[in-house]
Length: 397
Image 1: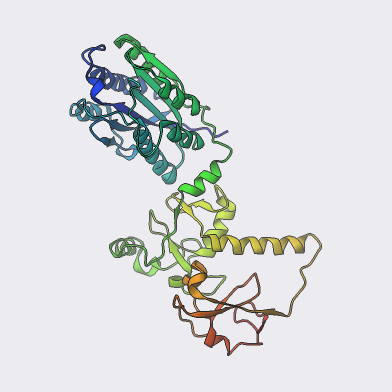
Image 2: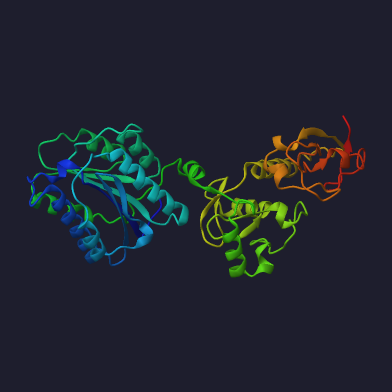
């Protein structure tokens, strides 16, 4: 059970044409605006130990993100911005939930320490989206452990879709037929502080793998960003690993320009093998890890994970009393560089120390714990001789 002392609340406000109706005073939309302000005011009183962060998505003439969690808006900010929200357009709640999920996902990437929550306020008259359905968006929210409460106002429209959304996400559907009902409902929801209520789904680690952001190569980083990071971190440290603090990879003995990647958030560089080892001891899942410097959720390249798994199997064989057979020579494999993906992009030939062209023929050491790549021409100098990295004899097929 994961306990959070912070909560992210994203309001989805229905500002469609039907929100201009006056069965709530002075109109449905104005009553909903006031209810959001009352929620924030109530939370301000209750927030002694638990802090609430807010976001606001409006569905109407267009789907707008008025506030993001990183904006830290206060009640006064909500009052100012909501004055400009007027009724019109359709109620595409499905797309609104999609935007709210993106806001929550970005926060999970950045920290993952706050309990996520969505509150929909509208009359239940939902316009069908050409791209998705409210139920589909609700299932994605449920997979991320995000509860959605729905507050249905007025008495003319059915609320089956809102009921389904709440039920799928273990939230609750509230109905408010008059202003006093809406006030009581929002006060009740505001009193539901996160406490011990947030339980991450069993498959949460798999979901993290889907939302984690891959490490960036130096080429993928924008030139301007690279220069800024270099100035902040000192040019001499820019091409050093943020874990081992060395330029050369301790495993492959390659220069950082070939074996390093950068955090997409803070720009800190890491050797691929170093960040993988860090992931093994600090990981939220086998293929994802928080950046040691900024805590951003990053993804470990598949090729590095596979190499690490081979090493693990090798160690198991030795510790289980079944020493792996020491093979004196390995037959090499021949391929083209572009079929090897990152394994070729972030490597260089140990003979000439230069990189590989995409369509170039390469020779690969057959030792599964090495897999060093050679230019086909360079390999001629080590054929039937020890590999430059692992020391095992390389045999021509």
